[in-house]
Image (cartoon, rainbow over all chains, first blue to last red; front, side, top):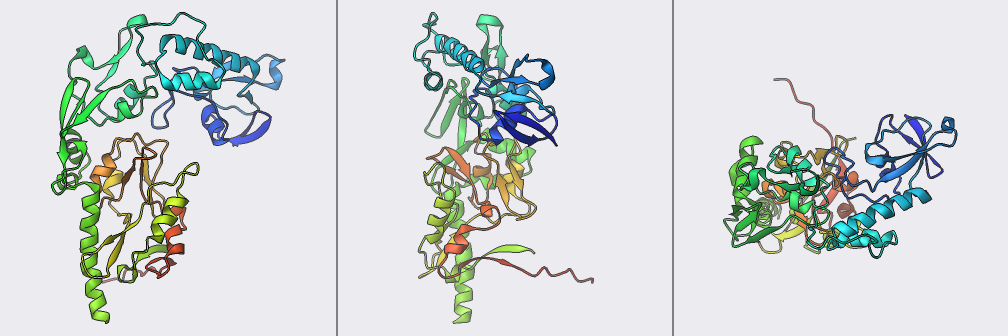
Length: 258
Length: 144
């Protein structure tokens, strides 16, 4: 265990633990867009930048992304130094110019006092901030169906060759964890459409409610050794089934005792 | 000491105190959460079955989680869901054969019983002791 100072408070943490997780544990609000606990940090959004210094640095300080900076003994961290706030403001200013339609970015910018961008707005811009949460989660779950394509201005998240990805099972983890809700999908009539690929949902054999796609259920039952019939009923019908079975036993016990 | 969560459906009167206790205990920012336990009609007269997670030994939810968000707490024996790690893929909701991992649509997150970290609130509020949290004697396996 080592000791670091965050905003004047001495905090105990593990050696080499990333600064952001220590900051979050101390319940200090540092904005992030590209951070997700399930996957490795990437430092893409730059919003978690903090000021770090040490007594032996003679007053010099460094500005680092806290999600990628390991804690070292004696480190002095300032999460809301004036320069850090300026830095976040200019980053949000740029985000606002590039992605003017995103509600999340608008809110975050307003929190930091950026109500309108000072730069030229990209008119036909989309909401994708290239945080790569979607691709990292897809990789981590073992599908790797989507990735970033192209470079520079043309960089975007897409399936290979812009065709329906063969590896996608339609788990929707990418769309549900997108910080700016850029990834679109359509559901309805027991079908799901995402990344130009259509899926059939598993309908509950009792009430017809759908939870996951057939491909995802098949993947889980094959890879994780779960019987496929577990997926054939929805959670509510499963609970009713359990209560009916337990009810029979309880009724029998009640009759025996009375 | 080994504690167990004991459910006795024959004592349940379906008053739903457990639901309220659960909802309030797991509230997020003063907004009630979805209850993890609910008495469901057992199919006989005056019989309710409080249905909640059975904390299976070979749990399908743990097996189904592709990001290791579900882990067993070795002290309480409960399967706990780490909300920070969860990616809302609904695998556990679909995989649970008892339907006890539930999607809380209000907070847009998956919830399941975690035995309140070792002191279930529902057991405190049950008026008829249909739900109990008490120590049990662990019988040693006899040699054959």
